[in-house]
Image (cartoon, rainbow, N blue to C red):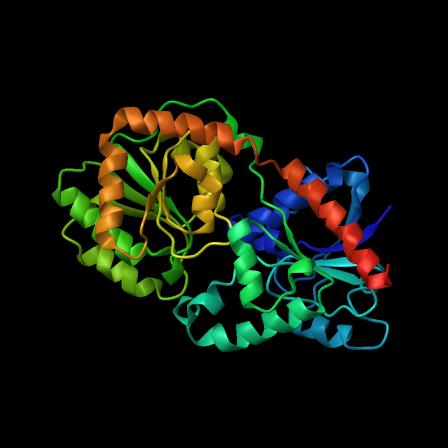
Length: 370
């Protein structure tokens, strides 16, 4: 059985985005009949959330430790003490996030979630240059690179990854988002956006589009589920100053059950992001039978397929027109929702795990020169 070092840390501290990917993939990998044994890399100075539920007990081991990342990094520079051997000896190490323990004595595989920081420096501000350098170095060291969508292959190319090293492995969607609809939890109808408050999510333009749509008679409120990210203060100030501020509600976080109920009862998901590697909120909304508005040319549009209502994410008027159409054309919205729900069934975490396990084998073969 292949022993894989698996960086589970993102799943200990964050349920959204990368944290969700790391958590769901880990659970699915431990359930594969002939999958790997996961030596879970989880050192942390501060306590993270509880270990993900659903992990098969005999297919993983947690290596928590209590040393901060800086100390672990120094240890991994010592001979024979890299993350391929400490805290566990592994055949391969999976770098799942943008913090990479040093590995010299095992094969490596890296998940590139996106390269928004390379596409537009404004997405990550002053951190862009150092992040770009670090990502390029790690991509060069990795034996294989996983990207979650066809559009994300372009991100890998932009960062100089050889095409033969890239494997497209889409994310899945949990069956919990496919449960029957529950009674409505909102007195007023609403539109929903899910994602961290950061520039690439395009909330500033979406706010202007919402204001236009409200002026033109759209009745739905706008609820955003997302924690604060880069430059969120300016956006929050704009929301407070908006003449429509009473129709805007920001929810910092929501657990899976709350998120599912919101997806099920929103009129539509508005996801006019400028850049994505995949777009998990779009897929989760699709599984709930919810119509979606997505930025044309993005990975989120790739996930939604032909039934997603595509808008130009750079044009406020285009986003506003999409909002007005999705709220007013009930027959079209219902038809699109049904098609989107069917498409969502093409994405499962089991399929993601199987493809990832195969990539593990390929990476080890490349490392050994096979």
